[in-house]
Image (cartoon, rainbow, N blue to C red):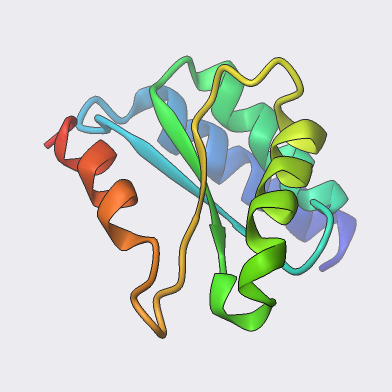
Length: 110
């Protein structure tokens, strides 16, 4: 994506997050298999500055060994939210694992 396109997307995101009154919870998705990218960190900063409730979902948890899921989730949380005040949970849309805990939180905002 070019710098100009990134600026346009950034403006769109800001407009949406700061002026949309219907948002009750932001579900911020990241790939559990990788460290958060610079774009992930930029998006995280947009979400934080919006001041809205949100959770971080480490998606594609079925793509790594089940014994590594907790460590990978903690690593993502430490990278994005080192103080740990934002819920960070693993999830797999393909195998539907870890969904109960995620839905429990989402349902609190519906």
